Every structure is written in C-alpha cells, then in structure tokens.
Image 1 (tube, rainbow, N blue to C red):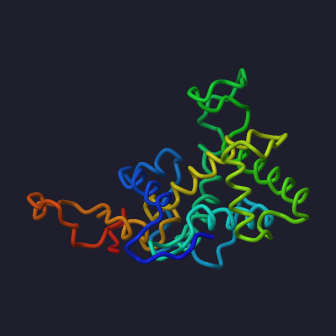
Image 2: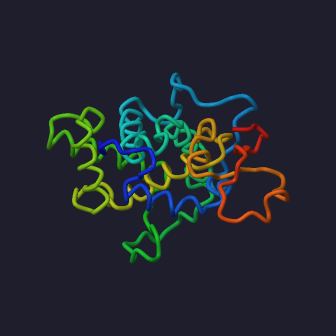
Length: 237
C-alpha cells in the first residue's frame, strides 16, 4: 500500500494517472460497452451480490481494484466508489461477451499496435486471467491473490503489467491492460452505470458532469468551477 500523503500532494504515479483520465469525457467511458443505466435511485452497496463473477473471482477483483486505485488523502478508492460492481455489470453486456466484436479469426500474435487479436472476449480475458494469476500465486505463496499481503498483491500486479509472470493461459500484459481499463472506466463513468458512487471521482478532479450550460462561467479563467457535479439522471453531487 502507498504511504499516506498530505491532502494537497498526490504521488507522481497517481498524479499522472488522473491527469490523463481527467480529460476523457465521462459519458464516453461506459457508452462503448452498451451498459444499461441503473434504475433511478439504484446504486452500488456493500451488500452487492455479483452476477457474473464467482466468489473466488470476485475476491480477486475487489482486491485488485483496491490495489490499482487505493483510497487515500488524495481521493476515494476504486472499491469505495463501487468499481467492482461496475465491472460485474459490464461483463453481462454484448460488448464484454464479444457479441459485437469480430470473432471469426484468424487469431494471431500480432504486434501491439494492432491490438488484441486472440479468441477470447473481454469477460473471458478477465476470467481466464484471474484464474491464471490465482494459480501462480498459489504456486509461489501458497494462497490466492486476495489472501496475500497488500505489498505482495502490488508486486504481482506489477509483474503482470511488465509481462514477468509467464502465464501459460493468457499473455499477462493483455489481461492487465483490460483489467486496468475496466477499473478506469468504472472509476470515472457516470454513476448510473454502477461505479463512481456519489460522483466521488468527479468531485476529486473538479469535473462538473452533465450540467446544462456554463454561460455564467464562460469568461472565468484559472478558477476552479464552484458548483458540484450533476450526473445523467440530473442528481447533484
């Protein structure tokens, strides 16, 4: 786990992470996944029961989300904002199942610039990758990823990111990039899709959300927008 920091100082990795993502239109993050919004008034909770992930997979996902975006003085963490719930719901969409992907093949080990060219759809990439990393953790540590100490979990994720785990079932870089993408999407997407609970990430970066107009603020420069964010349903943060 990262050391705690004064509230006005983010670590360089987190600062770079947020600087990149704060420029992405939040409504676009979930739209590509064809994820239906939650009913009005619904939201994630600590008692959420996953529909796609099995218990061991869910334990891995929650632990991984907590390591990838931990809660600290800078802002809320991924688990706190309901990102695991977002990912579980996203796995049940046509996008995640590959129904709207081109899947007939051929399946090649293509250069990275061409993107993933394998036979697995998104939800299978995550499912196979989780099982492979859990198996690797049992071989090395004698227990699953979710049961490891935080420092060991970070080390495993870094090894996956750099391609050093040598998983036989799936390229670990492929798995890690899709997992991280899902965590980012859930963290910054509109709360109606299950993550970003109470617009926590928008408040952190000062994103105003879906406000109808900014006429009164057009002429202002170098000042933080003073009003709280508004989500797609019209709810104010």
